[in-house]
Length: 80
Image 1: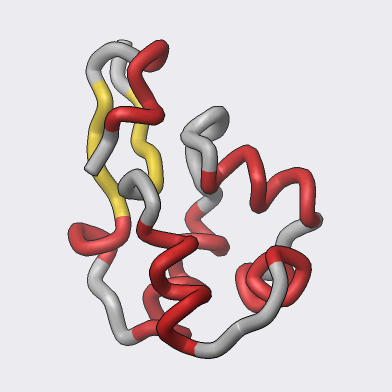
Image 2: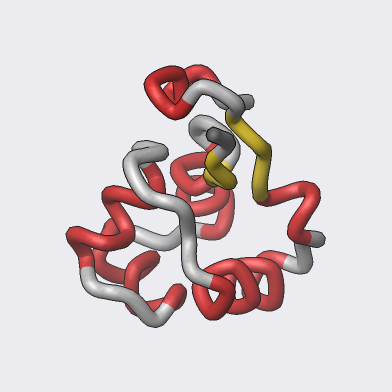
């Protein structure tokens, strides 16, 4: 089974380069709770369509720039 996940390290890079100071601020930007944001960031959960849309809008990304498809969910941390 395949999982759609955020590219490894991308949310941290976006946070750093945009000057956002906390994971909570990134979670709020994405419209999710902090624990959900952390699960998305770590590849533990597939992001919701709403989160994908908010992140793409906020950072002028396409879904293809934000996401990758992982065929082995146990390797989600390897996504880049």
